[in-house]
Length: 153
Image 1 (tube, one colour):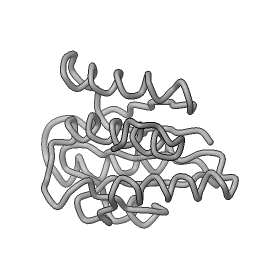
Image 2 (cartoon, one colour):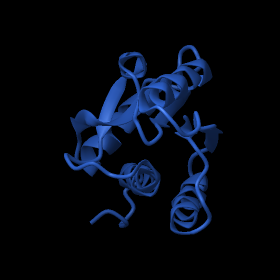
Image 3 (cartoon, helix red, strand yellow):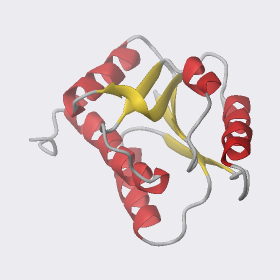
Image 4 (cartoon, helix red, strand yellow):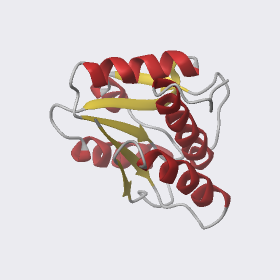
């Protein structure tokens, strides 16, 4: 199974990029991972930004892939439950799972409707840049759980 992270907007150097790189480098030893960064819609009207970025996300999705959208309205899973979901897809022969992290104004209903799973990291709201680090760690943790690694204890 291959993993693709579909992200809106570039990260500045520093904590976010270092944190994401740390976990994705570790993850890449066991699972192919690709990051695709879509451009932000620019500054201005939030509704325009959300709509434009959502259109770019939908255009970047591939037929037949599993899509997981990270959104505060999504299901909250424990780390073992998330690992179980990934393991189930792997065992079903799913070739690619794309995880979508939108921009500052989120995504439209059309993006959520395309998702096989809408996932929330917490009931709290986080900056979309910070979500990248948190999710990269959870993805690494899920694979560690599936492999029986002592990382998750």
